[in-house]
Image (spheres, rainbow, N blue to C red):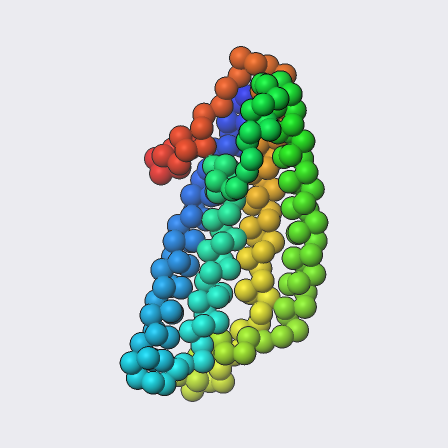
Length: 194
């Protein structure tokens, strides 16, 4: 198996994973909007604010971000300054881009370490207002642990590391073989739905 074949297989697997993540992120965005609308209605129309919609909206926002950030990273949608890379020419620009990708992966590993520590503390604390309303069926309600909210951090970071590895492999392969070209990540969006 050639490196190009490996990158294509890895890219296809990653495309499918990220497509599902985008679906879940869209659902989280929709739920976030519903929570905010509920809060606006109760606070300003009924003049009786509910305690849970704000925290539920934050919960959904964190998960939406953690699930969408890897796709944005893959598409090159993060803020970047390409003028330096473009000024350096193809070879030196490619090496510079590779260095930036490696530094990005290193940063993500540090962030992952901190996120895991944050989750560990999240199991100690309950959400102030979110709970599973088992009282509706005669049982005691269960307060949701903050760790469930914080898990969006390592989920997003791990997926971004997987994307970063794909980008590094593609960049190294392109530097070693100038005849190799990979499709735009936008092309991969349509293949995920097929």
